[in-house]
Amino acid sequence: MAATRRAKTTAATESVKQITYLAAALKAPRITEAASRLADQARDAGWTHEDYLAAVLEREVSARNASGAQLRIRAAGFGSVKTLEDFDFDAQPAIRQQTAALASGGFLTEARNVVLLGPPGTGKTHLATALGVAAARHGHRVLFATATDWVTRLTDAHRGGRLPQELTRLRRYGLI
Image (spheres, one colour):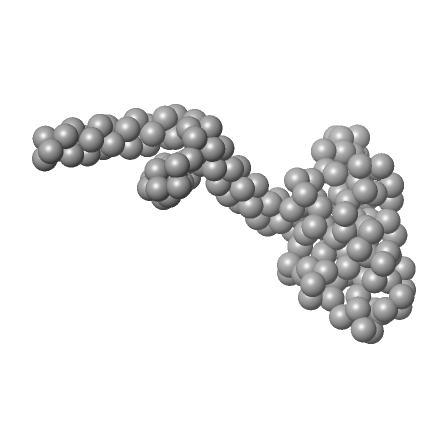
């Protein structure tokens, strides 16, 4: 009985080594952690091999999506990260439904523009940032700057004879 237990432990150790190697080769390091964490749960619950594999891969994809969203949010250049959950809709109740519709990202897939107009202090920058964060979380590349920054940037590119290249670069973004 002890020999059987040792053989199972050795086989499990070899499997963990192989999973670690394969996960590194796939550049999916979280697979090793998920596989170890879920192995006992899968055995105890009687999961099929397919259920176990699906659960491990689901953890990897979720983690990858989350880290990708964080990278896109950082790369966007937001002054500070603001979300729709942080916005005070009590001060602007009329825009709640419109904002919720925009947060779904439909305007991006339809290649429609969104323009936020209003006097200072009404939350335009907060909403623009929050919509950008939502778009980044949905997998879109986002680039953020103020209107003044855009005018300066494009004017400088035009003066420097780089406007076509700058516009080509900007086309790579789903949301500006």
